Length: 469
Ligand code: ATP
Ligand code: MN
Ligand code: MN
Image (cartoon, rainbow, N blue to C red; front, side):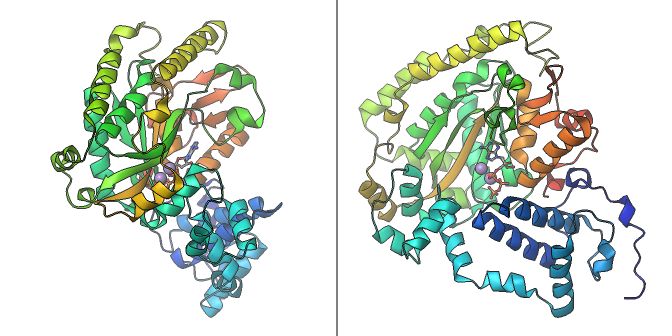
């Protein structure tokens, strides 16, 4: 075109988190191509690939937020995230219907195998490459090789490859959420359970289900996860996973290393693993049928009495344990500096957490399938079964950090990356799933809603549906 209307260009922000992006938009054929290039760079995983991957993603996000379907690359003049390389790819798609670079990757055997292998739970680009180097072509080849590593995730990931590759549906997510809510109500009536991740952003399926939990009494959240897992195991829904303890501490505010608040990993207590989803999750949202079917599954009487004992032992109303001082604990992230008092408090809390964990240990003995050998895992996968293996992430946040945790665990991954960089570059603040921190003052900015998180960041509020960057 000779004349292209670029009047809307200046209105668009440089920041994806400011613009927002919905799941559907009018430039999908372009964003699909750019995200394939991003994916390819991530899988190559060599020195400069991280920034290349990021550049493709940023460009893709610009296209997602365009209010019109791209018809001419001139329409992108002025957008800082559109570089030469991207412009060429887009021009090719506009001119010839596809980009030779993209199609070559799409058809390449290497890319195909890397995607195949990195789809195994616990396998990243490095392991996938080593499998290709061994000459393996398929999952069947890897399975034939037998025991190849000590990481349980890979053994389970290989055994349940087909299950885990089949997307989790919204119905399954809702059924599981209902189940978790019901169990949590019994454990701790005031607890709050929220499905986060892609489902909260409106996706109709996902590779896993992410559930964030908290309790309005600060400190009462510390023992709910181990109780919940005990309850799920009693229903015979737990296959295999691992706990991590809450390792967040105020000392991190003065720690500038990668291990501290800089890491994109958070420090919450969580359980990451694989659960059994009865087939009835697909069709029936009513909890009762799930519980009925789990009742019929064999469970030793000894095991059951062990559980009722454990649960009775731990079943103390959280509010009896926690002092709710007017100025502090009940208001989320009450404005405070992370200095002596809080340091002491955080140490006490941490000790209590550790004691609690030791008290219910050894965790690994608690779950029915925890100690299966690789062979037993394979025969479990090959057995006649009325359930599907599903990846589950369960995260526990103290209430004072909850709304930041909610933003962090809602994502998208790129939305997080962008909003955190924005906080750093524009406001000089550090944003993580634990809070928004002024590192110079050693201060945390409290938030009692997601809206407040956005207000602190001086950003327009974005609904989860608009965080699909
Ligand atoms: P999918 O539908 O494929 O599961 P998703 O958006 O839910 O997509 P996840 O990998 O499940 O992706 O992650 C959900 C959100 O939680 C992401 O936004 C990610 O940034 C965040 N997240 C995932 N793992 C961690 C972690 N270990 N520490 C901190 N945040 C994490
Ligand atoms: Mn997810
Ligand atoms: Mn997840």
